[in-house]
Image 1: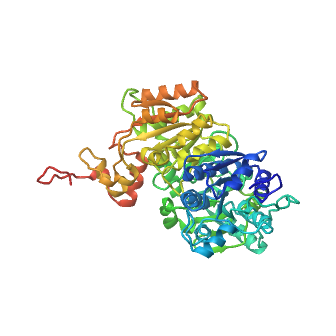
Image 2 (image 1 turned 60 degrees about the vertical axis):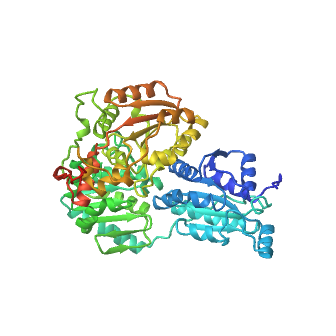
Image 3 (image 1 turned 180 degrees about the horizontal axis):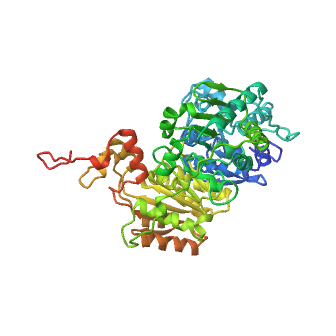
Length: 585
């Protein structure tokens, strides 16, 4: 049992508090009780109980986006293997999250050796969890000895903070409560070694491409935010004075509305799902300087057609064109050196005049028409353009049609757009919103598809319990629309038919809101949406569930463009035929 002495659990908590963490998301379990008991007594870090391990993991990942590090405590086996999806996403998108758990104690292991008993929540291989997490962490450790635990914790934490990726810490049940010395000094984070010759060669190669380009562009990626380089990037944009875009994951890495560089913004680039004007502009660029960008298959057109024009500089290396690979270089150093060069330079880069125009700025003709993806985001854009509270809210998106539509919005303030656009896990947005709400003072707006929301709806209960004022909009068409668009886009025609595996059940959202203790609104028309937003502006302290009734065959324009480019199937060219039984085929 825990004592008043300083324990291994206290050691980890002290280190986490030192890094600015003040919340740990958890689902309880008997193996990890020593850690949970220590957390309850620890001054400065609160335990936030969640309903599911996956939800707790999403929350910790959302929290890490604003605090720089997150932590989740779960039961061994059944908890760790449930939370791993969230941790995989944190690994891909560079969010340092600490997974904390415990496995059978030293006494239990003696019993296991003597009897061959299979202890609960285990597979019989008591290193299996550690092995599994090695693929999605930068350190996966088992703490079996309280004497060595502090050193292992320090090394793992330093790695997480340096690499901006998750770690896994599993202690034998007795170890978390075992006595150990207090930290003797602050955690030491060493800088990554830089090869100066490589760094200089990278700089010169990038400068040559930029200076000879007729239409260069900067692409900002999520590593800019993870490393806290926003101010340095704004200074770089001032010195280069050329257009910039962002990946979807990095949307709002700097302000799109105000500050340095906002007038250089040409919209978020998401391949064919981009605003048409953004896609056309970037596609014509002959030098693309991508800083800290994670390229998924949404960017295949750029990678295949403009690969020779790409200059990719990341935390762990760089690639200029298709062949010049630079290792042991630093993104931070590169940005500083490139800025210094162009501040000294008497020449200027070619800059092509561009005025960003978005279809979402068009006037809505009929406020009483049924809401659609296009009219929903058109009204959202108009509210952003105005002086209403909406422009001060965080906007959280998951893998859904709405993600690609929201990426077309213009005017998001710094760090107010949150998505898992690289990992793309259904349900992430609702679970993530808990961590965002507890790490950031802004109100959060979640826009989810009903498929993703159904996976993580329990988070509403935790939002209510923790007095978060998050508003969750569910775009309810009762289908996996984004999935169907890639299966057969003809389903979105009047006579089309959805694949059975893409159909969802019908839920009573109002009853669900009542069960989870949040307020409920229903949006069927544009006027309903305006009314819902007005209610949110007035009622700033309450969580809401807002069902948005979307017609099943309403295909979001961004998704239509993307799906047609990938599949080669055109919605407008769909020809529906009926068989002798009257079925569409």
